[in-house]
Image (cartoon, rainbow, N blue to C red; front, side, top):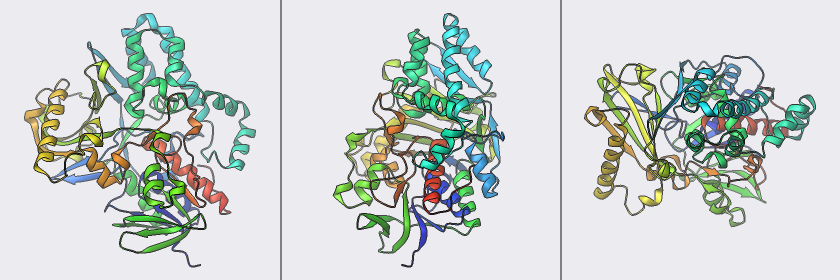
Length: 503
């Protein structure tokens, strides 16, 4: 059978591109098919009237210069292997939290400086604060000592388990623990526990009790080691660099290719069919779509359908992309902010405001004398389903809601309403359309109390069909889906007889 490529990748999100790049560098032929005219999915950039906006992601781990073994500087290791350069700018503060009753916490790169802010607010909890964040540090120390690979690859698991028996056993135990339950072992102050919930919600859109300790150890410890680094030119620099690496080793990334169906034969994936009728075949197919889009839309056989109730469905987003006069951004203003008006509603749609101004770090993103501002809140597609996207009422509803979010944001950036010169608004329906994501969702989440290893891995119920992205272990976030891509490539490469070298 004449194959179009050894491996077909559906969707040019970061997980799929990472898998494609590593497989291509290893000598396997890959073809990545993307509906849009640009790569990256939620980690893309777009230009409008002289401004460069991040489509979604803007807080980036994984660009450490450290050459220590481990999994937490994956971007650096991947781009070094591909021979591709992605310049970045270090951000001294991960996120500046603004919470009720004047409780402000800038999360400094320097761990002691950050803990000092918490201890100053909660001196009676000093020992608990140090103990809890010490637990996160212990998870980081284990993870940073283990090589990245597939948990479904028995050879990898046995090799790691043999060489790092103590660390492997300790990590296995920690997979049963949650961030919130661990915090409550050491801390009793309710306001501080609410902040720890917010630390989890800031990236996992779940409270701390529902967030696995292992995931928290990655995100909340690595920020004090590898740090937060912004790619020059915007978030789109990451997928563009992955595409460069794929092409450098002979692979292909094709845009304007809307995959309509993953083709099965005798229960195994054989290829894909595009909406224009073109068919591509391969030895293996990787889906970068959500678990619901993959098995309830692209795979047509009802025997493989996945109930929405199998997982919690994370919300979608309402986003504002603003070009503003630079005078509204004060000197010393941090890039990333989170604003909570009321603890009673922080985890409801619109209850928490996320804010970034990346042109503070990278002035090339905006015209001279201007800044890029990205404001977003959680939202649900069902709130907008009564509108047709082109209706006047839909546009009016967007404008009204956008104005209310901007007004609330003025708590941390006074005068923002009057400083806006360019404005683009996106609802969950926008995410559903352009990102091909079921209800525009941020992806599937585990139910509270579930072990993190119950998150789907890279293999699926369909033979030769694999998954990468936020529907797979370890979950949401750019560095997490990057890991999923490494894991997926590792498993496929070994199965096809030419295992990857460890990063």
